[in-house]
Image 1 (cartoon, rainbow, N blue to C red):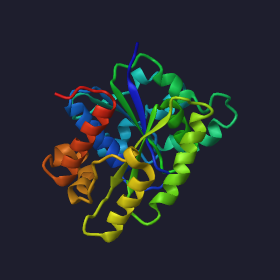
Image 2 (tube, rainbow, N blue to C red):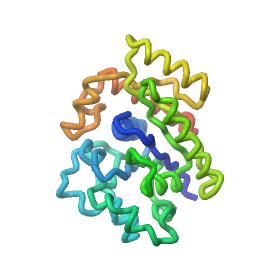
Image 3 (tube, one colour):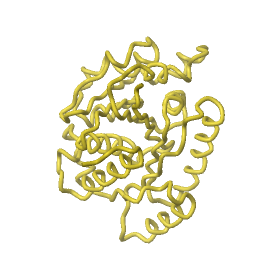
Image 4 (spheres, one colour):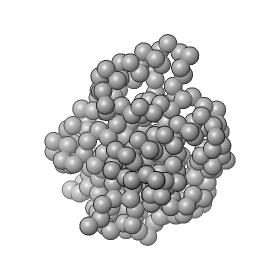
Length: 259
């Protein structure tokens, strides 16, 4: 029996740290000995860029899973990180809502591909900043949703809507789906607003909020331009250390034994 765990990294708002979280959480999990696959579901392809995959090397990827039903086992690429693979995305995904509009299985294509005996412990799906057919495919294929949440004024409004969406999918097409946890990102401890948002989110969701907080960190922002995870770019920076701590939390919650 294949016991891989599949998580969507999701927030309908852009710029909250979804891709940064997918890359660095996946890297830290791989460093703990887990075999990890990252799947880029954003037409912008930022996940692919952040892992150093050139645009010319992204011709075969997520689009082929969803449209041509090619097996994910034939599409992954290795990265600079041992135990970490990626399936890339490109602009072909932009028209997916239209291309799949008349397909009865349009919401389940990704799940069908990932049901195969893929040799991974964890699969992280980097979702686009929208609740569209790509995000729907991710949530239908997942057992958990990881929600990066920027510590800002409107954070709880968007979170409430997202939780409703997760609940709706769980009550209809994917009964295994749950909120795996909220990750506070871009946190500035000097900012009273950040502190207030943290208090509000923890009061609202309690143990569904991870203890680890991802700080605002220049090195996290610089790493993608070098095509490597922050954990490789600067292992000792505060952002990298935060993602290492987050990986421990996620792994422990998943029942993974950490040495």
